Length: 472
Image (cartoon, rainbow, N blue to C red; front, top):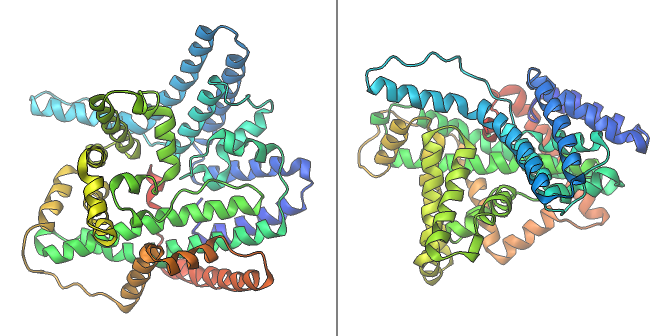
């Protein structure tokens, strides 16, 4: 199921909330779990049993690991549990990629390729695999005690607001909220408001920009000028931000409506003054996961410079591969890893010297260029588009830019960069953090209802556009 469908907005969500609020406190988690299982089963009925089975095995493996006194035995159980989850992830998400790569090599050598039935992978598998690993490793490190109740653990993994595309939540951040919480009317209002902001971001900005970007990307490359190619990738750069941050706002809003506070995932990433700064603001929960479970175990900052740079590059190479089973994603990750190394060497200092606006624009265009490899499935298409960005030429196909597109593009620019100023930052704090007074609640309630109704009208009239990060 998708947050941006009439089925979810007009049927599932109101029914879910009504039943939740009238359910006795001791049964609320049971209802959350039932709703989450139904939510996932709606879109991926074939995989729900895989998800439920692996959570069952993980729960008892971790419980057994925690009772072991010998460190060597604990470590074996830890690797068994981690290996099980990574094995499932690799099989479903990367088997096709490995076989296709091998077959391409066999064809080059004149050998008949292997026959292979392509595997469909469970939606959201990357996100809940990473959450499972956080639970296993944190219990192994004795940072947390394992949950005693299997149903609480299952709820932690498949809680539907965050199940498909995050944020990636460390167990210790949500453990107490699963077992004991008290949702208030303020939580409900704040949550509904945050949900509607995300809905508006997705439907009114991301979808409209994305529709034009798709038109440009689907045009034959020789028919595009460099200028139009740049418009396409800039529109996509804003689209992916408002698409993903819109989903996150909706996830945080839904969770808050039931008294659960999930971690923020974005902090004005296009205000970043370097790629290092960008990755401290974009998909922050993935960044923290990579830091805690990859970068630090590899040695972190405690190693020599050469090893440190290698670790940085390797982590982002893995991050790229996590995003998708494609050489283009690996290139995208390697590209960002190189810029992180350059930041450490000299680039961050240089960007500080040239001033705020030039460094922000430079970082934005570095990110935009990288998204060429993020957007296109094949290396050939990505490289051809990249060449087009830096070659002259005239449009052989006329592009029409509607007033609606121009309006939403202006809003995207304003919302992305306004917090660079003190006034913009103050407005953002007022909008997102809010004030616990009648004026703020009444104003935001009207804004929420307006965004909800306008977004709903677009959903019913426009072609459905799924979230970009659902394919990861």
